Length: 545
Image (tube, rainbow, N blue to C red; front, side, top):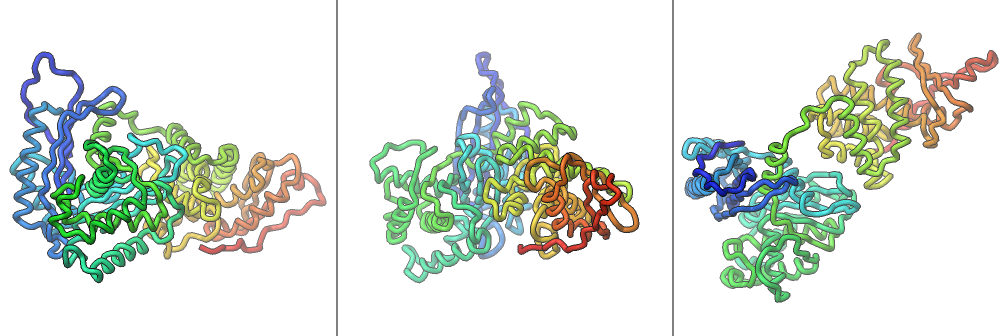
């Protein structure tokens, strides 16, 4: 992803700030940004360049990049590398998105860029596109206490990240790029009524498949990409505003709906003349605008803010972070502190979650030797316990499912992707339905990790039940295993009746995972000769999914 760029000698009075550059090879256009790194982790733009090469033209029909489009794009990439070299950049990164990612000859394009220009092109996944767009938004907008949708629309795809406060709940990657929609649905220009209806139905069908009923309705969309910038420029021109940057410009959903209605009845040549319209984008703006309008309606978002940075901004910020230095791979204590910090972002009940984590660790320790539990499971269980209630930041009823998505996209430093998946699944199953292969999140795990999730989620359910009233009445729990029975001995000042009741009814998954019966007894009751502990045999309700 990194290329060395031959550079001109810097003049004696040249600034010492490290210079970096990023090239974004998109479906519709190719963009370069050259920047000087600032001490605070930001940057100052030194130069920008953009060429509309339409690399993805015809891709939706043929599945391949057309030779002419490849030539235009390779020439543009070469020119941009030369410009970057003239600024003496220390590092240049080139990233390609949906067109190169999806084309059958996409790798051939990358090989040719390497052969001709000595430039390595990194083909980023759609998920990485969304992550980089979010990084850009987090740099330029205050998301604290807000629920927003971060949206990036390119030529081939749309990425939607639903963010609650400062944490990611869901990421949706959809084939709703402006070029793709134009080539698929725009059979006339301006579109006839039946073509317009087909376009709207096609967009809605994709939104149904990927988003369905959203978990919350973000009041604000923060959008990046040429479609958002063009819509903002036209609305601003209508209002008599001046030309220039549209960074942070605010549109309403009604603004977009009204503008798209006007655009779809205006012939192409007349659209090119609309104030604020980029003439090179006039042929794809109707489909792109329709995608924005339909998404805003689906999410019930009233305000649309424009972020000019997008992907290349995210790439630059990632490069700067690397140059400023990493803290290295986090050790166990550091990892758990990061998990705690993430839980605080989600406004979890810290006292309850810490106590559940402590009880879960004690249960794991008691079961580890008899059931030969893998040592790595303890820290993953503690992490899941600390994070099991993060979903409350979205809502209560489905907070276990929201917890899965929040953890999965939470950028937990120090945890490899596999461990994040395990932790997210354990938190997902801390209540309600049991793990099933019919669940996509569970089916993606290998057989070993599915067993691990069942065991850890079973333990977490019992530990969570032991603090049902959030009063930390159960101070500690010991485990005794014999004759197929796991007996939990509860240390409490008074009989923890409510906690025993809740832990017993939630012990069903643990019974299945360990193939054992479960009994919960109060330690003081054991010390009384007349007291007898009863095994809890009533099955825990599975609950709906």
